[in-house]
Length: 472
Ligand code: AMP
Ligand code: MG
Figure 1: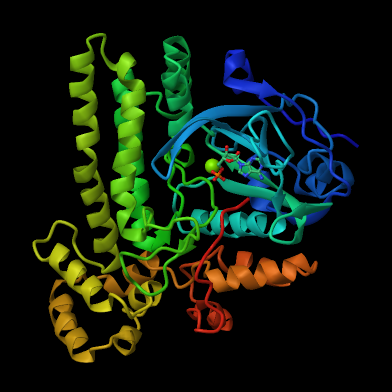
Figure 2: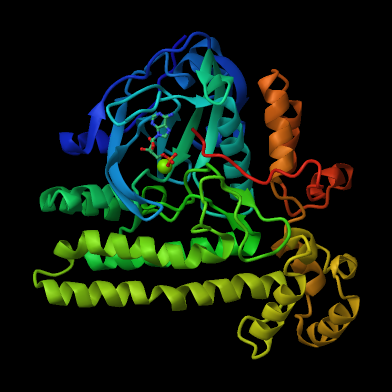
């Protein structure tokens, strides 16, 4: 039985040079990994139908639902600082957009759907590991109140994908406010296609920032959204791992969970990604990299900011220079909340910096903050006397409702890399019980869940995952 899905296709209405229309390459045998029933409901989709043979056929790309106009989007981008003039959906297809229960249009994208004209040397596929990782982490980020793309479904393909070894193939259904990236603007700017740039700006404004009246307003809005987003990442110890300009959204959502990880032991220089040899995308570098990426966006938008180039440059520079203050304010708010302090108080920044200084290099970031309310943090300090001295000052400054405020600002549960790895290892064998357990616990990360205390424990020397690989 087919299901009428009210797809809208606003991206497909854009000029032809924005994408390539095409269908997914069918797979051998779609198999269920997970359906996100809550998200399905928010999108007006029937989770039971998604789980049916026809539903799985759609999620695997074997069946194009009526009303969908699948396409691969084109974009460009700076990857690790190097310019790639032509990227694009090399293993993904946009099926169309759906309006959610809150009235927002959301992209529905299949990732792992086969080769496209933008695949370069790639096979257009994804193996099950990265699909499970993106499902777990993006849904956890959502529960942690971070703007993010989401995971509607994961299915296996019944086919083998060749990586370091033969691995089971899979397709993720990704839901996003849109898939517009900094790199989408760069693509047209590099071709000096001002008409396309203007069309893209209009599309982005309508979709994400309807209050924006000019290109400069759009740029300012993206900068403000990214400043807030990066501050959220920092507050959770999240390391994106591959902050290329094609992996930075215009909407302000986190996108592309490749070699990402949540930091365990606090250290600003922490890097997990195997492809990030020089630590470009280390935890502590993320705000600076965001500025770098946003400067690329500003550069791409220049011709539309002002007819006079010098004026344009001046306005764009001013916009980008606003980032540090916007970010500092958002970071201050995040970390003040994490310590139940008044963000406006004179000693707040000092207390935050001192606390971070004391845990640097030895305490688990998540547990150090989570343990404050219950007094367990002292045990994590190398120097308990320093903790006591800090606590004496903190006790005088913290807000009256600190005891209830702290657990609401500091999760007990984050998706720890070694747990994700364990879920993938059993998933490859067809056992999704650990994957399901992680997803279920991570839906309420701020809640005490003593029966799942084992998931709070940082990696040991034996099970530590020191590197995460690109999701290819
Ligand atoms: P990412 O590093 O995942 O952001 O991807 C960078 C670029 O490489 C994008 O244009 C992707 O579409 C493309 N890409 C990555 N993996 C594959 C693959 N297995 N097949 C085809 N294209 C890919
Ligand atoms: Mg990408």
